[in-house]
Length: 117
Image (cartoon, rainbow, N blue to C red; front, side):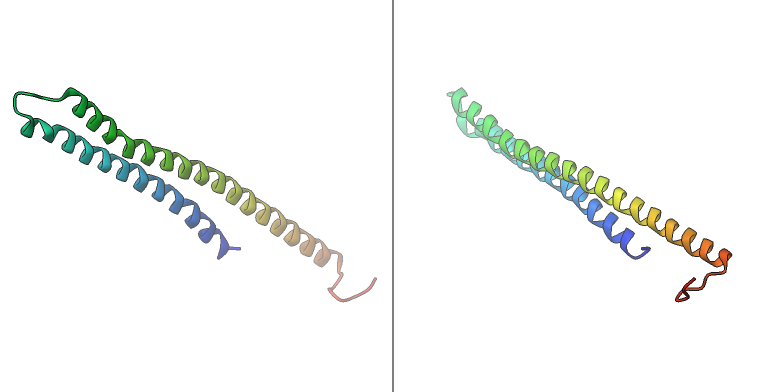
């Protein structure tokens, strides 16, 4: 049992790490998009195109929305996997305790494994 528990918890934590990375990549994509949108001011001169700027700002928000959607999905998967992991560990502990209690009761009563009686 002791070998299995760290592996189960490690898998759940890797999902949380992936969620953080997805949100960070979404933020990075939005920052790059905003830099590109506002760099149009440098090349626009006196005739600034507000429609082009609006499209650039809108496009810069898509990476953040995608990153957040992926991040939320990973966080939900993490919570679900953590719940399942906790339930499995609790069941292992319960059945281990029952087995220990059963063996201790058998030993107190004098029964030996393999003996009929």
